[in-house]
Every structure is written in C-alpha cells, then in structure tokens.
Amino acid sequence: MHSLRPLRAEISLSALRHNYTLVKKRAPDSLAFAVVKANAYGHGLERVARALSDADGFATLELDSAIKLRELGLRAPILMLEGFFDEKELPYFSRHDLMPVVRDMEQINQLTAADLTRPLDVFLKFNTGMNRLGLQGGAVGFALNTAANHRNIDAVTLMTHFATADDKLGISAQLRRFEEITKSAAAIFKSKPKPFAQSLANSAAILRYPETHRDWVRPGIMLYGSSPFADKSAALLDLKPVMALRSEIIGVQALEPGDSVGYGATYVAQKKMRIGIVACGYADGYPRHAPGSNSQGTPINVGGKRTRTIGRVSMDMLAADITDMSHIHKGAPVTLWGEGLPADEVAAAAGTISYELFCGITARVPMVDVE
Ligand SMILES: *Cc1c(COP(=O)(O)O)cnc(C)c1O
Image (cartoon, rainbow, N blue to C red):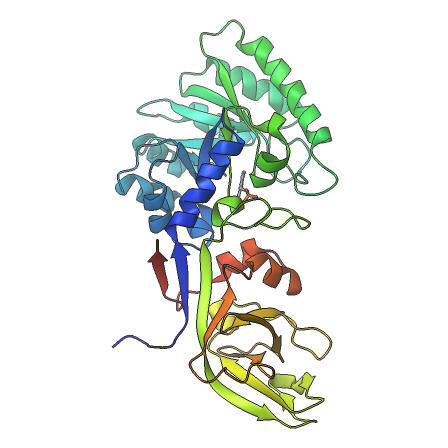
C-alpha cells in the first residue's frame, strides 16, 4: 500500500511543450538546447525528455543523466554544461556522442592526449565576466588554435554564460569581451575547412537580448514556466507553469485571540481565526524560510482562493489562514504553487528563486504527469 498522503507535484507536459515552442518563437533562427540538468530542474528527467523529444538538443551536467537520455533513444545533440570532471569520463563522451564544454587548459590537454575512438564536438567556454569557469587570458588563443587543428576535436562552438542578463547590469561588458574572442577565432579558423558556431543565451538573454541568440540558445528556467526576471512575471512573458504542487487541508483549528501557531509560537492570533493545516512541509521541499509571522505571510491557494501561510513551516505541515473562508473544511484542495500562484511569488516571499524551489522537491513527493 502506498501512502495516500494528499501531496503531489503535477507536471503539465503541454505547458512544457508550450514553453519550448515559445523559445523557438523568440529565437527563430537558433537551435535550442532544452536544459535538463538537476533532474530537469526537479521536474523529472525522463518525463521532460520524452515530452520534448523533438527538441533540437539537450543540455545537462551529470554524465549518468546524459547516458539516460541516450538510453531513452534520443539522438539529438547533448551538451555537457561542465564538460568532463575527470579524464576517465572521456571514453563515455565518445561512446554516447556527448559534447563537452571545455573550460580550462588542463581539460584541453587531457582532451588532446586522450585516445578517443572518434573526435568530439566541443564547446569552448570563455570567462567573459562571470568568473566561475572558463578560458581567459593566454588560454584563449591556445584553446582556439588547438581546437582548430587537433584531430580529437571536430566541430567547435564558442560559448559564454551571462551573470546579469536578468537585471539592470545587462550583458554589454560580457558581450564585448565575447566579440573580441570571436574575432580572434575568425582569424584562426579562416584557413580551416571547419567553421565555428556560437552559444551565449540563457533564458533571460533569450527573452531580453535577441543579439545573443546566435547558433544555439540554452533555455532552462523558462521551459519550466518561471520568469528569469525579478520584475516581470511569467504570465506577462506568456510562459505557462509546468509544476503544480498540490495538497489538501488535513485539519482545521479554531483560534482565540492570544493563541499562537506552530513551532516557536511566531504567529499570535489577534482575533478569532480559523486555520487549515496543509500536508506539506520542508521535508517535501517547501521552503522553511517562507514567512508566516503576524506582519508577513507567504501566498498560498486554498479552495481556489488566495490566502497566506501562518506560523513556521514544519517538517511535514504548514498552516494557512482560512478565517474568511467558512466553506473551507478538511479535505479542501490546496495549491502551494502552480497556475494562478506562481512559484516565483512563493520564492520571492521566502527570499529565494523558483529554480531552488523546483530543484528542492524531495523524493517523497509523488510526481504525476498531466496533459
Ligand atoms: C543552467 C544553465 C543554463 C540555463 O539557465 P536558465 O537561467 O535556467 O535559463 C544555461 N547555460 C548554462 C551554462 C547553464 O549552466
């Protein structure tokens, strides 16, 4: 007997396909990797890959998830966003036709020293300002020359990743540095039979900076229906939420003025109230830092109507204010996020981003497909 605890994450495959189609509309001249790292941002790698089986390509991070995509029969290009972590992984890149990001001199040397059954298509990642990973300085020319000439390297794509495509700092400084690198590459590749491609844009850049679209775009969060921008809602961008986290009221309490709620007694009723106890807590991935104090709550939908959370989120439960909802009783449906209540809003209240909420859904939450 499996648990009948009324909590589940519903995954809308039609919303997912709508969002991928929107990427293609916004970047009509580019190919688009569906970014499916971290178990497809917590949505389930396999279902997302099947729903997007016509995608131009997939981008992931974990070698086992890339191999899984091949086992599912997907033949499209697969980009490994952080390349190989150890040269022992390289034979699997050849065998499964995976394209590594190459991001430092050591990796270039490992790749050229490897005994590969066939050459790899590589994405040379340049650090243009994010300052996490990427080739820079003297490594740039070395990498371009090696990539243009070495037998272990077939097609080459120049790549960078923006730190501030979603906010007012924008991309201009990083784009300028990338264009310098593109110029060097053009000079180096001029005498070569092979051209090179380019890939820059994440979701924010896809939506805000068409000049970054180039050959391949790399949408992640927008596929899952959230906005990459703090100041622009997903609905305004015509994105549809893919995940709906749903539960039920499993108990109701009547409060008298002065009664407190939950651990730490952080909420104290100032009047007669009714609260509904919801079967969802931080052990399910709901953020414990979602506020529920007297002065600030977190939005939650009960019985189709928006209200707020009350008190601290506990491991398995949280409370919602149903004082003005006399029709709400035990068994009433609850949406923690989903259509009508964007995960972005819950995340903002909890001081995080929807990326973290989605990735944080835990294994005990059943996931079900809906069309
Ligand atoms: C995760 C990732 C993306 C997708 O970013 P979103 O903001 O989710 O669109 C794109 N490129 C790289 C290199 C990434 O690691």
